[in-house]
Image 1: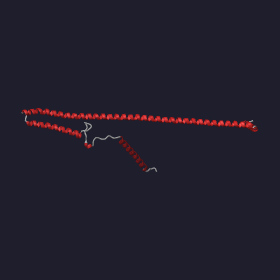
Image 2 (image 1 turned 120 degrees about the horizontal axis):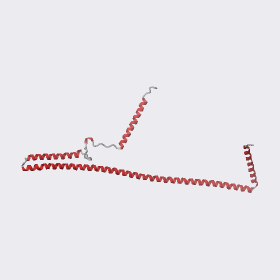
Image 3 (image 1 turned 90 degrees about the vertical axis):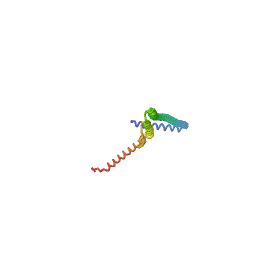
Length: 236
């Protein structure tokens, strides 16, 4: 006997036993009611348990989703705190850099002012030295002129030359300081015909120059490509 036949025989026996049990229940209303009640209770318990398990699973998933959302919000708040901290640090660094640059520029300008003032005082001292030398030369001549050792004409002639030299020196130095000397650097001259010192390039002008250069290169490449396409192919 084959295995398939054994399986069919077992199924037939189960069907026969099930039919006998159904007939027995039909003939015994009390057992039938008890069977129906038991099956209802089992089905109710099964359905209730499945609903309870599903509810617990959904509730657990909802709690996990809520925790995940809460953690995301916490991360968002912490990221905002970090952003504010970094912005504060960056602002402090920028402020320190600006202050350092400002202090450096102020110190540099103060050195320039001190140098210009010192040299201007030295120029004034130079004039007073010339004046002292001139008076030193005129004093003996005045004495000699009063005592008759030299004619008055010689005294007046030498005095005129010394005074003229002093006045000419003062005029030249004053004209050079007012018209030619640079107002910021003592040892630098101003050339009015050249429009002053050149202006250093800025970042914006350099960016514009780079953009124009890139556009020129692109235009040249397109022109070369168009010219290459217009050249007839001798092999065609």
